[in-house]
Image (tube, rainbow, N blue to C red; front, side, top):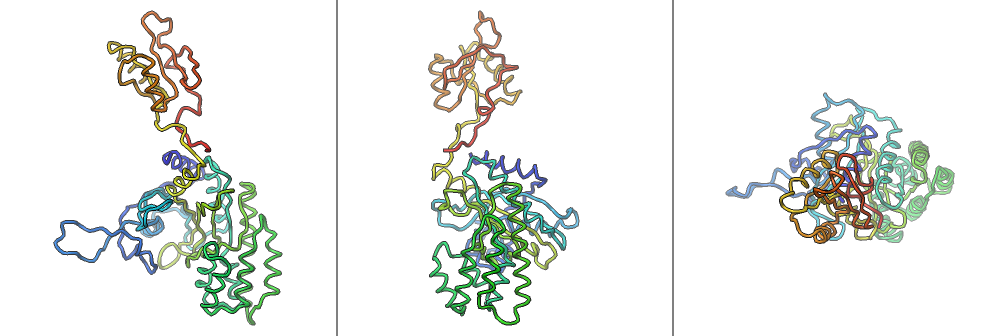
Length: 432
């Protein structure tokens, strides 16, 4: 199932011109940790044979952003910008294993990175690509909740909040602690009651289109805006216009996908423009399945603005299975089991199997020459939908007959022309 999801993502990403890269799994610890608290999640590496324990210098990457930044920095002279990449690799985090949380899991990222500048329309493009990738999977409709950090930060500064990053981190907890808890945190950080009420009112705005513009304009007008907030107002207006254009562009390409949701804060300091959170309709309790945003600089020192989205693939599949949303059409790749009439004729069965494989049809030869009923039972237990019965010496057809063991239909077949229905050719993920 995981392979099917990864292959689908690769296909959609490649169709939109994103090239795949792979980076090393090990990075210097100081680069992984940076200035954040991420060091708590890093698995460090050291030689077991070392006589004395030394301070760890190497660690396994816990996401794909840090190694991607290094890749761009090291290869900037050979890359064509804007550089479009997707990356699907395992990452490792120091989690306490539980439902939906793993110490080792697959992550899939897409990013577009520019050199010095990045056109704003790419914020819509990455969202559209990811929306199409999710739509290609047998999932309930995905709803992408969009916001813009310039709009939010401009409004926060307009109502006199100095520690904007701290306020954003508090608002980012709305789903966990509710409006009352966020208000208490904001008060503890020195935010006035009026400003706290204003930003909570801002966070309550959600529309399926650009109609939020009138709502935020009215909110600014009746909020306790501080004197001399012209710069904040300009930032607010710029973010509002950008968000409206983003929502309209995504919905034009993938209808009824994007909503403007001014609650989305993404409490990470490096986001500067569009921010994204994605949930499945009717299964919002699963939380965000895909998130990301616009950033000013991928590489320390600046000059590489970008925008990207990320899916925790293993977590998504686990939650999908746990919620009964999907199942696998079969557990094995084989579409056909070629029966063996008797051991003297095993070579006939092997030759038929090889002719099918040459045409891209996965199959296997029965491990023994038991009665055909036993071989059918074996195929059924394996989840193989078709059994091929090689022709006997007296049969008119050289290759024999093939049976759909689910329906019981059995027809003459030629190994150079017969093929299973398209839905049976490979294992698939199907809606539960």
